[in-house]
Image (cartoon, rainbow, N blue to C red; front, side, top):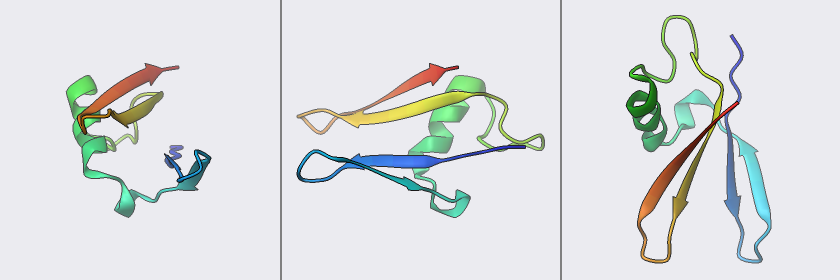
Amino acid sequence: MYLTTVQGTYDASGRLMRQSVSEEDWPAWLDAAVRARTGSKLLNEYGPSFRAILLRMRDHTGTYSTEWVSY
């Protein structure tokens, strides 16, 4: 099993800041997004069952959207 979770955010000057995120620190929305797409939790008994990048964005009104990019 191989799982890499990286969180990217932008600082005040617009630079992308990336940091690794451990399972204990995964954001709550991540598992919900995986369940909605795959019908399974992020980590099942076989590990992750997909290859994808999940993006969560917030628009100028504060509304969040999630984009799933399979590869």
